[in-house]
Image (cartoon, rainbow over all chains, first blue to last red; front, side, top):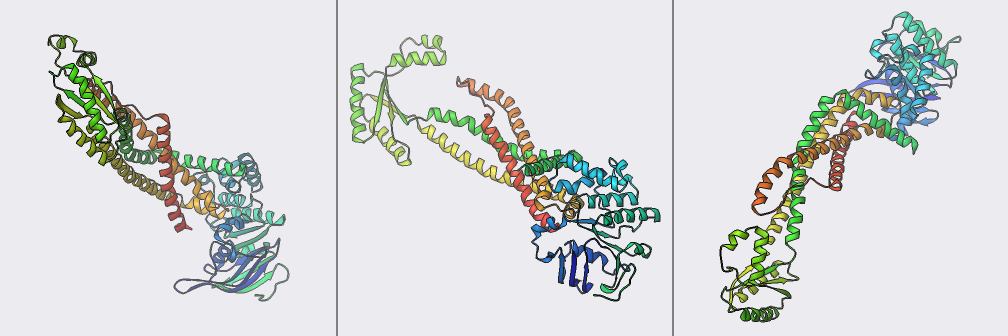
Amino acid sequence: MIELRQLSKQYPPNIRALSDITLSVGKGELVFLAGASGAGKSTLLKMIAAIERPTSGAVLVNGQDIGRIKPSGLPYLRRNLGLIFQQQNLLQDRNVLCNVMLPLIVCGATRPDAERRARAALDKVGLLDRAASAPQSLSGGEQQRAAIARAIVNRPQIILADEPTANLDRDSANKVLDALKAFHGVGVTCLISTHDEQFLDAADRVIYLERGRFVESWRRQAPEGAAS
Amino acid sequence: MIAWLRHHGFALADAFRHLLRAPGNFLLNVLVVAIALTLPFAGLTLLENVKPVAGQLAVQPEISVFLSVDTPRERANAIAADIRRIAQEDRTTISLDFIPREKALDALKNRTGLQDAIGTLGANPLPDAYVLKLSGMQTREDARRINALAKKLESVPGIDTVQIDSAWMERLAALLRIAQLILLFLGCTLGVVVVAVVFNTIRLQVMTQREEIEVSRLVGATDRFICRPFYYTGALLGLIAGAVALIAVALLLHPLNTAIADFARLYASEFRLLPLDWASAAALLVASALLGLFGALLSVRRHLARSA
């Protein structure tokens, strides 16, 4: 489903964010990217979402090399990805429902259909009663769950979440994680970056990065050695 | 097709949503653009009003030939043959009208309403006259031929004065052509001003909506989807400003017409300035909207490319 081949990213003048990463994530897997701040987790997710371009190497999503997709084709790639970031990126001048409807409107859904599906997505993350609320009136955990609802409303095949539990208290973080696990339960591939070790038990697989390099990867019951 | 319409509907609604979020800024921009548009619109209105007047008057070049007051009627009638001969020698096609002095006096009485004053004169002070209408005279070379013909006519015994009636019309037509050129230049210059104002307005809007643009990109919005509301904003700005400018010009005509009416009365004329007809007004509105759209197009292309 996701394949990275000798992926490197260098920022000017000479900062190497990622070095020679090779790994793959299978369909329906729940994979955590772990590592300290600056390990390259966010950069890796941004390159899978085609927000950043690799300096060298290739990113394949569903067998398609996204480096070869023209800029005009990237929106159609992103419609198959659910993106969740540390900053929830909810639009403050629209209510929660309108925020969740946005990906559907972008795809040309009718307003009633978009509203129905957005309400269903909010229901799944336990926020239906806050649909009409302004994002700033929600707690950090609720905002993150609203962002998850927006990410899954288009029924993406892949969810990429960058530190979705950062800055949240334990209870809120658990709710966010439960929401993500629920979508993984219905066959969605999830790639989640975190530096919080306590959530790693939920993963099918954990990939460790350190200073932009692959360190090790282990599966839930059978840890494996370096497999890059 | 339906999805395309739906996207446009969303873009238009989005444009309105952003306008209503900061109506003060939008209205100020409308005002600036409207001021820039008012001047060429007013000029065009003026030209459109003057053009028909000039058109009615300048049908054909005319030469008025006034005979001496003491020329007997027999000689006056004979002069027609002299005039035709001179025109034929000059290879000029003319139509000749004889206006007897009695008829001229009647016409003067009817036109000026000075019956009482003219009645006190006793004898008719007006001479017999001929009016020559010249066909196929439009170039500058023709104007020289008309002058030469007038000179020859002046030498005919019994003719007192020869007056080229169309000369002032030629000058008016030339003035109108100059005015049209000035208006075109003014229109182009102020069109650039409109584009610049819309360009800057959209630039600021792109900057304030940077976050929204980023989020839209992340959820799979195409550039066209992102750009459309800005295009609508630019077109709306131009359209509303155009409407404001047209209304301003129409309002301006009222005091102007009061002043013109006093002036026109001196020439026994009912002339007054009229607002542009619906078709011209609609064309100006479309042009204003297109200018706004063009400004938005330039701005969005430049600033969205930078933020990508």
